[in-house]
Length: 205
Image (cartoon, rainbow, N blue to C red):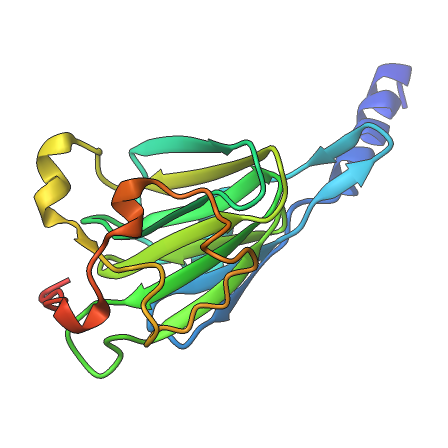
């Protein structure tokens, strides 16, 4: 065999043995809300990860028709930054680039699951798929946290009337916030959302 051919064969064997991201799905009490375990490939240089790999995610149960059109990042400088609870008129795939968050979710869709909750700690190896009609929130539990979210429709100010909001402190939800909300960093708007009892459920989502 020619030297060049031997080198190519050796490189092919090395490439064939390289580790790749593995993705596993977990269900929750909220129908359609999925939690994914997403592995890292690391060495002394750091790590590499396929954060969103549609073929693998669909094989793990992500809806095949989820096609993101926008990727946004939320930078959270301190522990205790809390955002939500918001239910937007699109589906979301969320995770963190660095840091860690506590995620809280409430089903606002019409039906027997209305008001059901789910709570997830999200680090670099965890992502969450959020269906339409599910209110979502997160609280940073490590400093310098970058929260990532892909959505399958474009954000615009004009679509805000389609949102629904729920109060972070609603006692019927009993959300176990790692940082008490009295000590958390929250916008005035997010502190004053309505209680679940006053919410009209989403229909046809």
